[in-house]
Image 1 (spheres, rainbow, N blue to C red):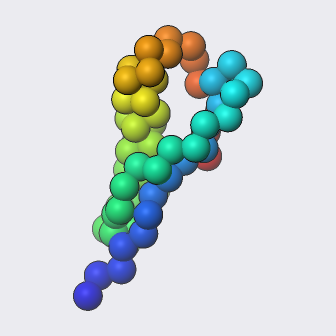
Image 2 (image 1 turned 90 degrees about the vertical axis):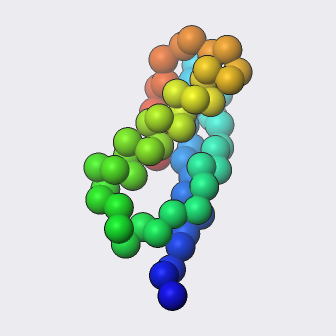
Length: 60
């Protein structure tokens, strides 16, 4: 049985910190670059859904 992990990220926009749960993934099959890409795309979706046009200050 594969081990899956809940993937999430924290990020800041205009000094306000947001926590975002992205989903459940099998991290053993994902490269670190792919994980970063998933996080960036999820943050962009969050910004779109909430009408945020400001730049992301940072994310983890």
